[in-house]
Amino acid sequence: MNLEAVREMAVRERLYPSVILHGADEAARRAAALDLARLLLCARPGDDPEAVCPHCRRLGWPGDGDAFHPDFQVLERDLKTATSVEATRHFLRGAQVAPFEARGQVFVVAAAESLSGEASNALLKSLEEPHLTAPRHFFLLAPSQFDLLPTLRSRSLAVYLGGAGDADEARIEELALRLAVALAEYRASGSAADLFAAAAVLGEAGGWDDPRAGRPWSLAAAAVRRAADAPDTGPGRPLLALAEALLAAPQLRLRGISAPRILEGLVFRHLAARAAVS
Ligand SMILES: [Zn+2]
Image (cartoon, rainbow, N blue to C red; front, side, top):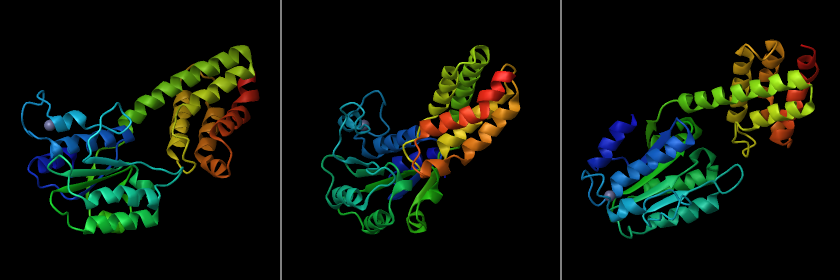
């Protein structure tokens, strides 16, 4: 099922009560949830999109400006690596009451992949209860539908938003270019400061807060591999070895070493002496 088909179902008020929005990147998943919420809660669906109704005007991601709508609730991950059962129960309490203003309610689980087992079960119970007076919609956002428990998947419509490819591709290209610049400067200067700068470029792959996350490491590794292809970067082999080491680095991260320390350590180990003699 793709997003266009799901928008169509929302407009016709035929949408499943629980929808998994997975794939793409976090920003795209959030944008899709907001887009569907507008279709579900708008007072004049199908009208001139310029004539914004009082509901649409106030629908926004919490913390993003001052937009607030009482019938649009978002559950964010509250712990470092999980969405707790306490936060989930608190969030689900809102689903026990009728809508405040709109013709329905929308509940968004922003990082459904991080739901604890207990939190997943609490959510499951809410999905199984019929709504009281008005349509009630749950959107579960996750990188992959397979990040969710099978019991949640079986009660939800999974909507794939596409590969993360495009957004990542631009990011990798940008990081690779800046890495190549830092390494060229290092070759000219031999100064450790330029290697620190190279490690800092890799740090901008971002998303390091979750120690279990593999994605920032694979982004950084892809940028290093790309830089190895650049004509001006010097010998490729140390860079390829660095890329390999980055892919294995989540294990170091799980041992409690911070991401910047790991990046600096690996960059120096693989690029310091060798880059200097090249
Ligand atoms: Zn509207």
